[in-house]
Image (tube, rainbow, N blue to C red; front, side):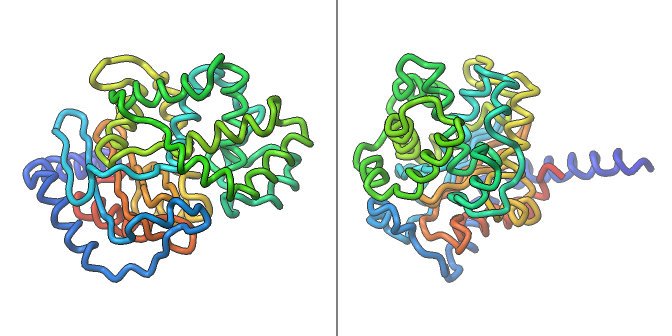
Length: 324
């Protein structure tokens, strides 16, 4: 029997087994197992507003392409999505600039902390990828050069992919980030010195802190990422956000760069493209099947949700479904 045929057949069997068991049953089972674990993580207190969130919050929501929506725990409570928003700003910029985008930001895993100055200095102001802080700041600068009203137009984009007009920035979180954002100021000024920032650095930072401040529920966030599970097309409206090729590349960048210097570990254990945020959220995408969001605020030493990572590892193990 051909090895590729056998692999495909095994995935088909796993998928139908999931449908027979029902997603809700699987989510409930894994949620109960992970909820019972001792959580050694800590909340991201370096952004003061994030320190006010209850460390015991834990929610999961799965949005599928055609099989329904499933949630458990605190999945209807809003939280700060933080760096998860970088995927959405990247998608918006990539849809406008195409290949020219990569002249200013790379696509390689960083292997360093998400706010590393050393790597940026060594590479002459060109960020390693668009999902570390420096790369996302460059994407903000690009959007500022492309849009008349960047903050309003980006928020409209997020509301469109999420199909929800109530989503908004959080002024209190954006202000808290601005007051504590010394390292990000250093990053943007360093890139400005290398000529990789075109606009006023304070305006770029204001946009960056605002997009990181967006608050969404697990249900809203998983729905917002469904276009990346659907070849770049919003399932409910059939509007194309990205071409098939660009959607594939965004997923590839999430797979290799979505968890900073823990991206390899996430790929090894979970096997899905994804993106984390220091608000405790993680979004993962299974192309052609679903988008899933997990929220648990306590972070591991790499800055990723401890229980979020554990849940997704057990979820893909239980379902037998990953991209591999």
